[in-house]
Image (cartoon, rainbow, N blue to C red; front, side):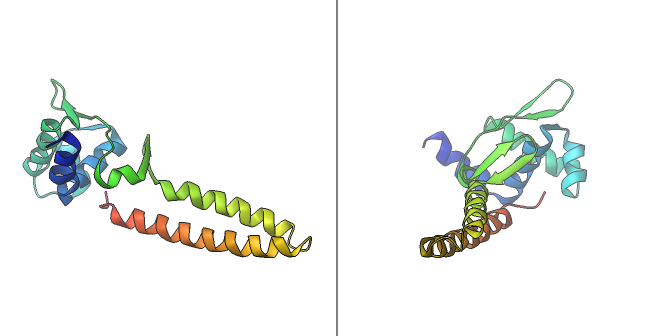
Length: 144
């Protein structure tokens, strides 16, 4: 089985492990106790289990002080997101921005020609769909 399929099954398919990985993507490094407090786990042992699991799949690396450092990878649902620093942004967000700019541009020229009314309607529809999909993608991620 190739590594992406394993990651999709063992990490992306496991809600709590994915939640820990998303937290790690945002903070870049943490200890088991920090993860336990941030994610409201019942004990640091539970957080350590998921951090060790991430380490076993080369998604985190533990240093000599017991601090885990994230190794960013794109797999499973994360393929639909752009990860930069603390930001995890659905790709559809950028499409929504393009449609918003188009809508604004067509609104400025609506009295010019009938073509602009059709283009405005199409861009508004695209904006609505892309904003809806962006919200759906955000809701699909576990809350961290």
